Length: 269
Image (cartoon, rainbow, N blue to C red):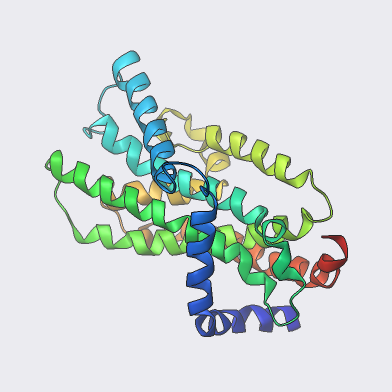
C-alpha cells in the first residue's frame, strides 16, 4: 500500500519540482550533442533523415500507393513520430541514472525523477515533428479537425507507459549492465510488430488480438486516428481499458522495483 500511496503523491511532488525538472531536461538535451559542430541540430537531423529514407524506399523504390486514400508520406509520418519518441525516451531513460551518477549520492535529490528528465528532453524533438506533420497536412489539403486535440491524450498516455518501463530498466541496469542491450534488441523486435510503416489491414483477422496486445499498437494507431481516421479514443473502450491496465501495471511494478533498489544505487555506481 505504501508504494501505491507513493505513486499517487508523485504528481504533486513533480509539480513542486517543475523548475528543476525543466532545467535538468534542457541540460540533458544539450549534453547529448555537446562538442559537436551542429550541436542540438543533430537531434532533428537524424529522425528527419530516417523519415526521408523510409519515404524514398517505399514511395519511390517500392512504389507504395496511398493507404486508405491518404498520401503515404502522411500515413508514414503520423505513425513513425510516436515510435521515434518511444524508442528515444526508453533508451535514454534506461541509462538516465547511470548518466547522472553524481546526483545519486545527493541525499536530498529525488532520483526517481531522472527518467522523467529524459522523457521531457526528448519531447522537444517530438513536438518539432508534430509541427512538421501539421505542415504536411496543410500542404496536402487535409482538413484540421477537433480530433487533432487527442494528440495530448495519446502523448500523455505514452509518457506514462515509458515512465513505468524506465523505472524498471533504469534501476536494474545499475546492477545488470546487459539491460541496455536487451532494451535495444527489444526495440528492434517491437518496431517490426508495431504497424509503423505497414498497414494493420494486411494482418489476418485471427492474429489481430495478438498484435493488439502490444501497447504501442494503441499509441501508433491512436496518432493516426487523430490526424487521418478521425476516431475518438473512447470509441475503442476495450482497447483503451487494456492499454491503461498495462500502463498502470508497469507504473506500480516500476515504483516497487525502484523503491526497493534505490537504497543500493550509491553503493554500486
